[in-house]
Length: 475
Image (cartoon, rainbow, N blue to C red; front, side, top):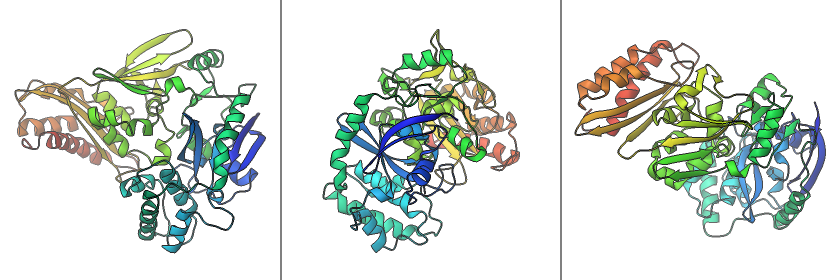
């Protein structure tokens, strides 16, 4: 496996090293740097024990976000500031968050504590108006094996109260980090001159590279690719990392159309106030999807390209009749999302192409709804998810789109139920008949998340619930 040459700051130390590019950030932190406070738990981004704060210069400041170091290729640390549990205290003086955790008895076996502490650190460092709801969201991706949640909650509330009235407490060495990082960036040193792990800065560089290296695996957040790597010891011979292409990181509206760039993370979308007002259904889906650590690096385009039959964004986008803009060095094309999926884990995306952006029409008058059934309310994979878009005029269903995930090899629209409903009066018996029609026209599989019969029942109940939520006076 070829080595890469990376330079970054690990707490207050400059790391200048060569290392195989298939290495994870966690492996480097523990095995190369010897900082064992960051733990290895599940290797899938579910437990949060490996959480670190990753800092990147943005608009004259450094923004820190919590990420799962087990899912970060070490190359992504290049020109960044990595903060681990060892880097937040000053000598023998604990950080105020650590003090709160200690004095509120919020640590038992201690295995989960570093990850919890770093999730709190990243949240409080990046929020001038922290609150308890924000803390709960920040800690969704951190499990405590000793069920010490009440003292963790108390320690979190104490930390919020502490920093609500004063500036966040950064260790003293932080004041020099930005200038030191800027100096590294000025050097403009590539991670890999042989381009086995290529990090382009522009879309053109990326497309030119893929044109010559169509066998390269494309990675943005990598939250699925790295799970496969960790669980199966998979080696990716070549990777093209799109995460540093700023021109692809955007979320914008153009009249009644929403555009999401290839590099927009789930957090970018979830925290966009305009989406929360104009297309709330997408926000609702993302609130139930993954954890803060995952959302901070995973992208909407990656969730679509992964072609999972239970991708939570896919049903919302299908119901919205979204279009996918594909780009290569030689061509650009746009296709409906409904035509993008071919079969299980297979799409229309060619090796030399990327998803450049997602186009989502949001016409006036349509009502949207999203539902998800899973074992846990959040931070869990769906058994079945669904979304609907409804246009009603004069109590007549003029248009209806019904999308489901988890009931076929790919996310699908249930056209039989759509045809049944279109043009009919909005009445309870009509909705109940449509729900039965939807159930009768699907053939889901039985697996560890649910039986065929259970999934069919969820299809029926989801559709009823959508209409109950949108039109409570009817059903």
